[in-house]
Image (cartoon, rainbow, N blue to C red; front, side, top):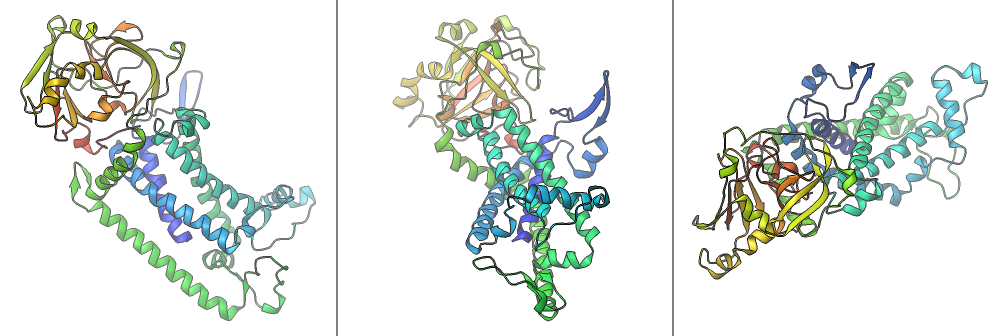
Length: 475
């Protein structure tokens, strides 16, 4: 099962790093600086380019959110295997494990003469290995839970809260990823240091002994001793190596197969199907949930991010928003005063960007559901359509930026036609005079400067969907 763990973990780490460092501005700021000078980047540009981390965010997210299920299922299967076979006893640290582990580490660092303590008794795994392997299993569980906490912070709000909030959970998830990388590097170095005999034992899962009669018998009720004689060892080594070769070849073939699949909106079609599977799975859980709100004092002005659809000049004083029915007919037009005449709503929520940053901000405006209520008769009576619309499409006045959102999400009470940000009218950079606030979806759905709203029965296209992202984008 280790042969399955390794390629899956490699894919998850690779795609995870694509997500964390897809924004070249490094939203997490992991580096070293002093007195205003930035001296060191955790992943400099050369490393980003070598690892393929340079702005490959959409594909990284698609891999991560699709193969995350295989990682989870394999981890569950491995946990059940350890429990059913009793092999967990070999990994569970004993009461003296910490003290013994420190002695083992001291000897590994050639400090045995200084501490003047002999190596403690070692079985298949010494105390340091037991603690490390137990921590790796725990890290896998934490990676899975924090992954869900930041993937669906609204749908799984309680889990996100238990980890201290979205940003804390995301930071923990990142450091667990770095922990996996550190474990892999140190593990390989330790195996190389211990020699080929130890490497063979790691591959086969059995310890080779020259004389099987010298192997210590297992205690009553304990897991049988894992030592085997030379004759048996050779056969098991060959089978284990063959298994590893087949697993590695299968992983390489599967990787190339996925990468060479036909593209569906700039990502392989199997990854697009992964997005669609996740949408079908999570929609019943998250569609009607509201995002956590915060005290107004926790918010501040959000940075300007993205100007697509704002380049064309527009006279704000003459702005109007057009509402279309499913057949394309015009249902009405609205000025900003019309939107202001609807009941005003104000709340403070966390805006989350796919680039890896979030910001607590206060929105003010009218619920989209209140606007939709103005056209309830037209949308349900059959005047414009034989049935109510299932989706909503929104565009900027110049048509350069456009989003498609399911009607359930649009009718969520937090889906806002926002005309205020931090209690002030929107600036042009933030989408004046009217934009969409989407605390339950990633910011890619947060359309600036709404020009047209259309109710439609067919799933509309979406600017970032066409560029490889998840159409649903629900949190």
